[in-house]
Image 1 (cartoon, rainbow, N blue to C red):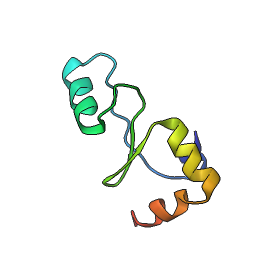
Image 2: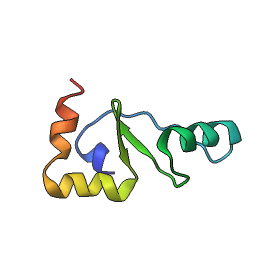
Image 3: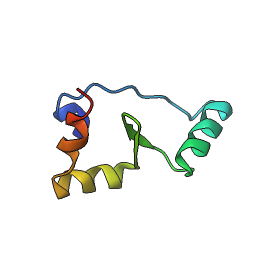
Length: 67
């Protein structure tokens, strides 16, 4: 919802029904929880970490680097 409210395009990759996709996500994120969020090549972490970036005022910096 946060990214949508900012008009940020994103790609959602569901891992719920694909063991292979879930294993890939876990290996790349070093975490088994979902969602795992990347902004470009930067691994944010999960939803809590995304909102922490927003609260700290750092999210815009990462989003600007995408353009």
